Length: 113
Length: 117
Image (cartoon, each protein chain N blue to C red):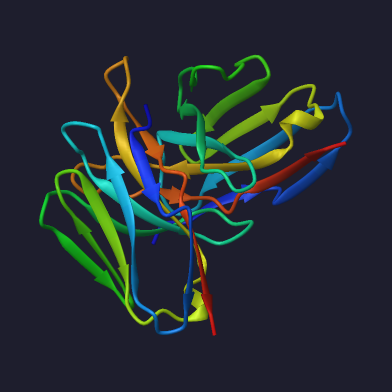
């Protein structure tokens, strides 16, 4: 069972058309939820960390929110340069007692001018 | 923010050869680094956790004899793909660190594109 599920897989928007990306998780005892942006052929770029339900963080046109079961990445009036794949991740416990980063499949966002 | 570098950024090799990829933390020390593999249009799949001064921890299904990891210092981890085959062609990414008390932030390298002919 996937512990992190992102939707939609792909999203096409017109410039200025606001929307939201979803990340739902099933791990218990959440130790943070992370959002990253990844451009083609590059490593992920850190955006936000959220720790508790109700928390919100903003950066330019992006705002991330967290509930007990999911997180949303809201994109307000997007621009073509916001086109990228957005990944969310949570630390998932493994049998050895440590935590490993577990990523969703990502949402590929394309913003048309 | 902290910077993680990888070298090389891309490599093309013949089947059967070995390829070494370096991951360096440039302005901070990392006792732990993570190695991922990413296939086209797929998410990052954790391969192994590299631990400075001890053996790496491999995820289920990852062959430790094929993907050799050496965490030689607090700023350098290497991944060697031994006897590479075309199915090993992928985008390899490292990151460091994961947990640092309450301040959880993971910095990723730019990735290494491996193509095995």
